[in-house]
Image (cartoon, rainbow, N blue to C red; front, side):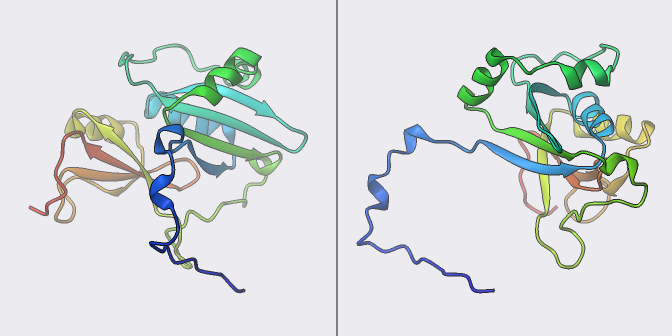
Length: 188
């Protein structure tokens, strides 16, 4: 496999690019079971489903963090309602005009029925993708709550040198970093 590497040069007008017209848009994770993953990202990590797109052999679920509304979602979890909602032209327009980054969960139909099916999470050999991260207002209380819910941890707060971050696993074994809001990454 051959990769071409491009070296930025002072002769290339990189500085003339209008950076006001683009932003980081999304990260995509492949998921085995959308019912489990949507529950995790909505009810455990507090994200909001904003758009759903079903295709013949795969479905896309787009979520984003709610920046203004910090209320807990106590609504009864109804996967079919989520799966069949958020597909309007208005949902699509709002999703495509948003400046906030989104998490795209891609479900290849049928994987949820295969007990042995897994995705490579990037944290075993060969290493690649690492993790996604969330800022948390009160990480100690949040980690206690996650432990009470039996959410698996890769790194608890007390582990290692950095006691202001933790790592948990999502339903597909992807690593999710939890970071105390306003933290410093100095080892203490």
